[in-house]
Length: 460
Figure: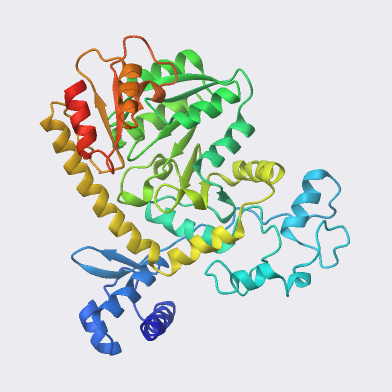
């Protein structure tokens, strides 16, 4: 196994050097896995893994059924050079200097140097971890923006979604919820009005309620927000922000269509409303799917992403992307409220991406999600609970009941049989009395015979 990894690394190094030296043109197809394996004297599996690593590093693009092609990456440069601090004389600049470390002599620092920790138990514990690295400041806070190689890799991943983010336009966070919290802290005050998807992402509703912000729901269809409802509420409420989710929508599983996306940007620009686009499931849907940030190019859209839904919720790693003039104050708020995110976690995630493990994991995850969607939708249909299939399979299906159903009683009855249901009312900011009863089904658990038997008996 170690020999195979060494061969993969050698092939990756060789092909990378050839690409950087211009041996292949942008968009040119590389030799097939079979031919390349013969040329390098390795097995097809070894060659395929090497190509996968080059895809993960953004150097190649995989086209199913066609092969591997040289990827085009025209990333924008930094909008402006970061100002060098003449003196750290206020609270924000003093803390920022301790993170960014512009100065060589540091008597004003608040921590001992990393060199004092060379023999620590912590360094020995992490010495063999993929989260460490030769250039890692293991005992510092790290940059407030987050681990630079991961931010750069995210810019490449965003380019695959046709979103061009500046180097100073990406900020690493503890996940999508942390990103939302920073945005709320910076842009909203008690009493402000915002629009949200209805049904929509309920943890966001809790954050907005905590901030004493007025929420107004915009009806959500399978193709995105209802444009007539959106336009009417923009005109009558003049909200500061519109929070929406584009693809694999939570909880309905719907996908944003191009006409809906165009209509959202037209309407919100007319009324001066910024858009916060949550794309938490981006890595399990095709990169060419419609994104508001791709159409707007991060002008009036703040884009939020996370690895928590596709990798591990325990890692707490996500990001936001936006115009640098907006990302900078969000960076300062992150610094003042939490100092920095975990460099260990961010290096770990980066290494998974660069090594190709994340790509292979996503392939398995997409296959499981697609299969589960088909099975669960069929099983629900069989017991008289049809659901509208999602254009792109995601984690959720939205079951609306044709007859009158008391959601609270239904969930309590399910709980007595050790079945956990998510009632539709939770996903609405202001649930009206005449709204149809519904539940959100996670497709990973939706085919459980105990659930299906309970639903058939209770509402089928």
